Image (tube, rainbow, N blue to C red; front, side, top):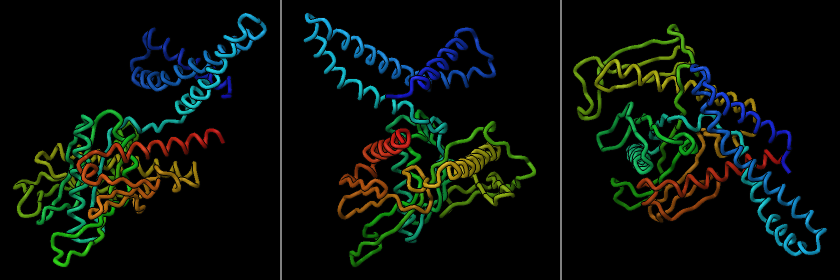
Length: 351
């Protein structure tokens, strides 16, 4: 049974937030109060359902003393004995500490790894996969930086994805993705293995991270691309260097002002992600063993084209649906990853 005091504290906190909203909270704090209220609402609903079932179980047990009601009481107790564990499991799931970044937009960065031209082509495949997935979920994609190659591959792609629960669903995509297939340039039909890296970062707001101007070096330059693509005749591209860390971000859209905003958004997301990782490492020494570690050097998934197979190595998941997955149907991969992560957190909660 879950601690009564803990449940009572959560219920009282929810009541306080509800009163704040109904009485007219401080406008400066209204958004934060509404956000916490929305997050606690499903928890409080789960608490109420759980407590009602427990009370019904006590009432039914008391009826065992009445000979006329004994059979009915036993039936009700048997039903409640099946219902209560399910309600408790639902409540525990609701009590799992939420990642505060789950509701944020995400910055997705894709780069080729080992494999030369084939790796750049695979990176382009991954970009299309995430764009199609975003379209299917009604999310909005905005390209921040795109550098392509002469053969139609990618040197780098950085985009922002906005919508409901973007980071919550995409955060497990960070890591090394491998592809096993016969390159178009391979005449002997031999299968090659290439790789691309994906980084998914929660977008950070200025209130999350203050970056002094003295820590930045901002340069403007002409945008350029393969074969004359994305080339501007004015110095509109912006390169921002974060001096303390050496991080460099480039945005090369047509508007210099817009490029500065986009580049700062990416830099802020990278620094915010860096700080989150430091906190994660401090909280859990075994963080790297968890699905959501997001280690950039971790091989997370293999796409085997000849066999039409996709394998996620973190949870030993194998699906023979490669065409669908590369076509943007990522839910069959992402849903098991989320479930596995929740199971780990539930185990920690029980422990």
